[in-house]
Length: 215
Length: 356
Image (cartoon, rainbow over all chains, first blue to last red; front, side):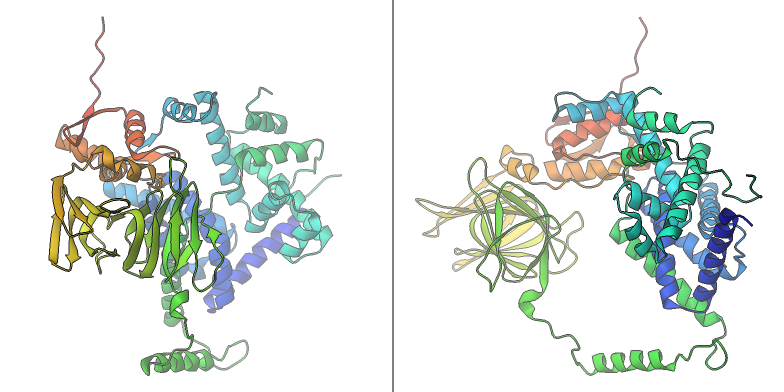
């Protein structure tokens, strides 16, 4: 058994324990479930639906059905993945019932550029703006697809620039264990990001794309 | 060294990955937070289902691994009993109760909280208590404020204005001007009263402005954009309807006139309009908001276009744009044309291009 496999088994066991505590009516378990799984589920739905009210409606019905069916969760897939699958079913059911998908309009890049030019002498090109938004969506979706503490650890390290000791304290583990979590999180994030971005992108290409320059 | 099967297999590769990953995450920024109101609504629904599920499952009161539940139930029952008997478990000082929240601020504005003598600059999201006095600096570089009252009314302060929050539904206007909007469907509850030295203005589902005119012949001016207000004067009440203005001088002389909903006199109200979040909103919602702010009636070239506008969802932001500028942006993005004529915003399809 490798450390990576042991980590994965530990995460799966942790989620099964969380579900058992939810089923037992543990208040702290419900709080943790809400804090860790609700925001990624909301963003998952919002990326697909756009409309705020519809997103709330779908996420509410997803959670209610998932909670009612919690006893069927076996931990073979992650809890977030399981909730995402439930949400996909709700979305599909919604549009089947309505017989159509909504029209969506992105404020056009020309319009956004015009808006920005009201306030700044120079504005980024519209194509670059669109590419940046796409990659932002992929980064956020990849973070949300990870086990909650993986996504949190990456944001703490690379956005908040927290030292490993502080990350360890927040995760309630030792510094060596925190280093290990970060290492797994980087690997998992790369895999998920490459999957979302269409596969095959090298890390340098990912970073160059993020900065808007050619690799 | 080979590794066994498992989902997180790849050998660690630190050659430049750290900086590249940092650049990628920094460019994307943090994941957006769920709007608090949405989060609260979803949590409430999820909790209700969780509670129902718990009740459907057999509860273990005694036994190995079970948790004895009567104590929380007894505490909850005690609390309900106490509330029924009228006891107050958390005594609250009335003056600490929040009656308004700052929505947006421009330029310099201040709060003089009661009972402290120090004043503090205002920030969006700040809660304001009963008795708070607010002032905005006068002049071209002066300040403006937008507030949301606990009653749901939106209130805006022009430059050179001083008010005091007397209660949930009463504002004392000491100088300058306030604009009040009870919302498209009205506040649904008690109306707002604007108290001045010359009289008190009571609204009945409206958009209106009350202005104190300083200097010689000082008096009070009221303009109503929508709905109606009543001005309570010693000599008797005076009603002011939509499209009307009423001026009262210190000696009680009244003067009436007309003011259109899109008159230039409402310009400061547009400058002090908070920008709503439009991500995921329908085009129709944004047009309704913009028309309400500009004092326009919304008209579509045909009923089908009106239905389409309700089905088109917008992504992006209007931050930094006034309501009148926002209309051009959203309609251009949706591929529609518009013009403003006779106090109405007319929305039409773009004419098809013809080939030469």
